[in-house]
Image (tube, rainbow, N blue to C red; front, side, top):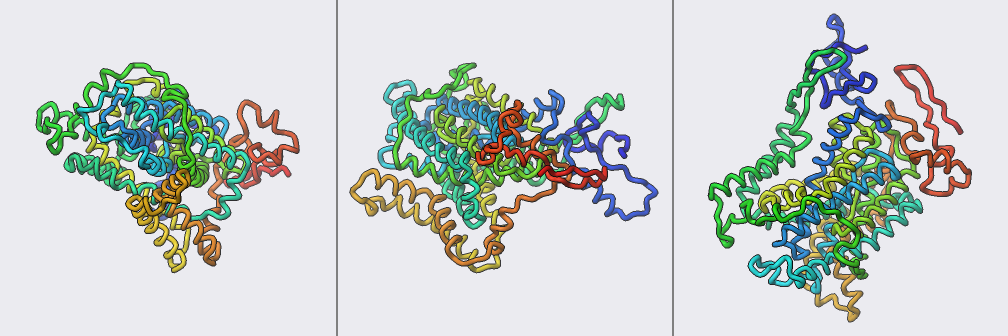
Length: 610
């Protein structure tokens, strides 16, 4: 039974279709029940979905929420090319930086569409991954790839000269080749079903040091950028923290016209909770612009605080083309080196494990049953294809599932994959607008540094949060985590300062060892994996049992076949043969019907077909 809306009791977004929109349950004002009962009922209603994964919202809602997902992923996608630019010798070439940003948006759009349509088929966005960032930086820090001194001097850089172009493109081609070859391993693991086998040995004590050490070694990059003007960087951090933590539960009342009630009503929209990074960057950016036009910030490059000016990167916005179509091989033919491939493999493994966790979280938040093995295999395989495409297009990075956008599903209560398809199309289109990438390339350096302080801290904390599944009262687990993380910081630092002591006389082998041992996530992840699987401990103590528990609340779940079957009739027409049960990425004929469960509201049962 529904009550008549009073205009302000709506959740984050108003859905006009009453079949999908779950309003709060009505309360009998004469009910003598305790207030706690009302709060419990309200919480239950708030947890219901307006649209589940297979529902199709109105087109305007798909566009609006697609834009929201695009903006949610904005911070992470923009940050990656900006971090890579220094090691690619592009510090003083903002136009090329804008091309990299646009290319990453374009490829992320393609990969999102592939994942939603043919991969795991959940509403999960694809974008650049920080897992690839650490090994890429380690590879580019090799002596032969270190940037010449003159590329770090703005007065000596001519961005259009063939010499400078070859300097940065040769490094980009090396990164491309490593990503493309390493992605073939991910494709193999996914489509062969090996991911399920690997997950038997990988638990929280392996994941924690791996993900934590993605962010911790980047403290120097964050500090250098923030240090160009600590006042601006601190202001940016303050705004992001203010919006994301202190003001997150403060709604804005947005008016809308309800056709059913024929009157104007209001819907609560939690802007601070949805767009904290975007709002923080925008406000700081605007303040930097005001301080620039009023000449409060210094105008001499050698003066502290100069890089907080918005005109430092020159006329990149005017020089950027309105339309630019990214294409494979736009920086030349990729090159491959053994050390680069081994380094990126560490990022690939980390990305795969993280994505499996994202699939289960996305399923719970979108009203879908836990993903079956064939869907997970297909999802990992498609992510491998996405990394292959990212390498071919020359983004300098791979692609993975975005945890931030999984969290956005819980905020909007709209789990429809059509919304993510709209977001993917939007990323694809905006990636062809050169001016869009140019705008983000002009963000002042200390603003970027302030964003990094928050973003890298959150990534490190996400890694540590996996320890909730393990028994941290166990001295065994405390030793493994502490030793792995500390070694992942200590060993790479020592190796960077003592490369001569590791020379074997074989150049290729030396480079492989150097890249692996200077990649903190590989060192920490490997030690965590080795110790966790060799030191005696129960599955409960290690957290493996809880970690691999994919069960969840399936009260509002859809049919397994409707969610995870291949689209356009592929699953029902071409995957019906009994021999396909041996193909790891095809829906099994006996898995298509949904598992029987009781519907408490309707008192009906859906029978399982065996």
